Image 1 (cartoon, rainbow, N blue to C red):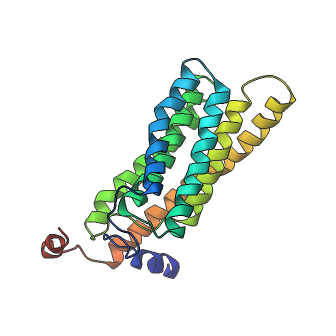
Image 2 (cartoon, rainbow, N blue to C red; image 1 turned 90 degrees about the vertical axis):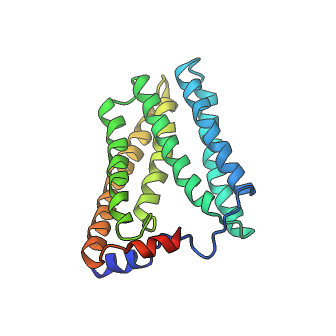
Length: 215
């Protein structure tokens, strides 16, 4: 209980002091490029079924995900927009991959649907947070670990949609990463929900005057 309270007390509805409101920074441009490539990935998987190019798009996305974070920290270019774009891009890629693989019948629909359902749970908590003057809580390490596993799992499962030793190994490792990723994804979501519950119990509703000052 103490650990959760400590985490929630550090959250804020306002940007952190290190984040600026700049838009046109190199990290933000990389994040925007990642977002623009989401429909390209889906077209490659579902249209011509060019799995090699689809995997290249995923690899490029993973590299730029690391690069934009490194650049933002290295050159002090953390921005409010970047803090929004980065997780949105990650979730859109996960959604695009699971939908694409489910439509290709590489993974069952039960697996494809359990991830968006968890995100719906997270979105459903936002109105509760806003009653306490928060827009979000700090990203938990488990959430980052889950995303890491899933971003490895689904490309491997796509690579495993074939014949031969490489495809078989990719399928085995892909499902291993997927099992861990899905488990951690939901575990992180449950912890997040518990943090929100603790916040609701330990803090009162934010006054309208306070919200007006933020606006």
